[in-house]
Length: 156
Image (cartoon, rainbow, N blue to C red):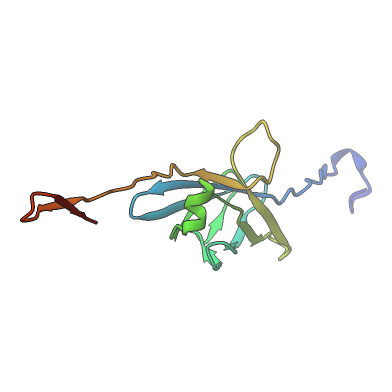
């Protein structure tokens, strides 16, 4: 009831539930000079998320900042990092890893998401797998010379 005692002219108050949520999509791409990975973070909730940082243990990265200081609902930001392939990665034929993004909602609460591979058929928060095509190659260089007694001698 309003201050005037008349309930017919009181304002309607409709509470809106805040849904703070971010999504981290991680992709990898093999580049001949070394590994190149991109991570994209999107605000999938209905409130602004600020101070978003990405941690990726495999890449040795902590607190990697996005290209934007805050993300409004439905907005996306990008961060880029480089990873140098190891012989073990090449032997395995792939690089598999997962990152985590953490930001703050308007009330200062943490909003966190683990990266996903982007495949809608296998659920959320799956590690990203970047396939590699190992190339097995062997080179043999052979030389020879003719000796005085007309027998061929071969050297490695």
